[in-house]
Amino acid sequence: MPLIVTPRQLSRQSDLYHQIASLLAAGVGLVPALEMLHRNPPARTWREPLSRLVRELTQGSTFTEALQRQNRWLPSFDIALISAGEQSGRLDAVCRLLAAYYRERAVLARSVLSNLAYPVFVLHIAVLIFPTAMIYQMIWLGNLAGYLWQKALILVPLYVLLWFGVYASQGRHGERWRSWLETLLHPVPLLGAARRQLALARLAAALEALINAGVPLVEAWDLAAAASGSPALSRAVAAWRPRVLAGETPAEAIGKSGAFPELFANLYHTGEVSGQLDDSLRRLHALYQEEGSNKLQLVAAWTPRLVYFAVMLLVAYQVVQFWLGYFNQLNQVMQ
Image (cartoon, rainbow, N blue to C red):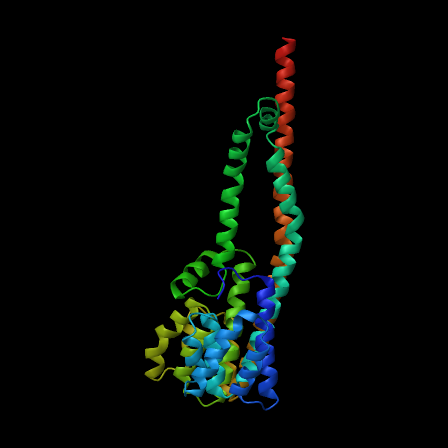
């Protein structure tokens, strides 16, 4: 898996899942479907992983086992969802869910990058121009090295910070990294709530698929929590596992846990009591998927505006500083 995932790579990931889902829904077996994709993959670099997948499957491995041996070709929560779909016999539905997820991420990433282009351009112009004394020293005193060094001290840390932010947000990292990132982003307005809601949506979708496949309830919850991609949800489910094995219902455990919103607890309890748990889980998935997506779209719309506003404040500050210095020099000359 690449170090940094771009919008184009996210689109290709969506295409991969979409094609697998379409072929499976049309009645094509998994191995023939992967062989067809191997001949014409969404990305050329995927030919080798697809070839290894086909080889593993023909040797008797499950799809999940084969993916786990591919050296992190796919993120761990992708594999967890695929495992849920494979066990439930609804692999095509899980692939459609993943295709929609990556398609939405690609759209949001393109939106953020395109909207950030102009603020970033203005930021670079401001850094290169201000303070104007450095330009004077570069032109009239020949201090090019000093000018470049000062600008590098400003721009290089910004580039490193940007690279780290993009790298940290990739889904290829392990449990400890995701836990740290989840804790860090939890208090961030909109973004923290969006991540939590999308994790709940993935959990509800995986749980509904596993329960319908007849997977035991405790095991289904463990797998669904892993598929959510949220270490906090995984820890909460692991904590109540002994109580559920002792006879407590999952609805009671959810109600006592602070990791789940009240709406989730109420709808799950209603489904458990009424015997329509699958319907409640589908509603929870649709609800949290929509709310999380809406918040991410707001983040994508407002992040460039905030960056542009910060750049304008920086430029305004530098302009005021320039004129204050200029007038101070005039006062000194006149005196």
